[in-house]
Length: 106
Image (cartoon, rainbow, N blue to C red; front, side, top):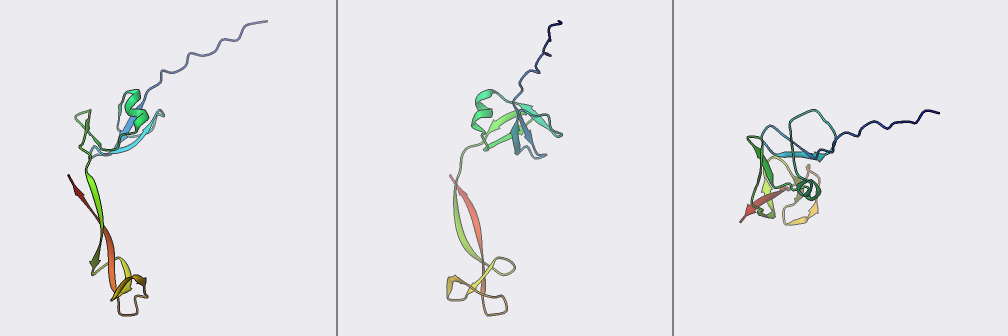
């Protein structure tokens, strides 16, 4: 009886796929279409998202604190009662539209 030989496994590669602007798209070990760079195991495990790919190299961006704030909007957002943002109203009634905006601070 012939002995079965297993094929050689492919080497494991940790990849970070990224968008045209260098922002991260996904971390994976799969071969996907698109641009990617190989990263080390630690970077892959941590899935660091505050990074950019520039000239084929990974650059870690400083972590910024974000502050979310409700702001009135003329065009889009959730229609609320003019005197109480907690009361959602129909757009056919007198209302003010509110949007959540995000501000980054150091």
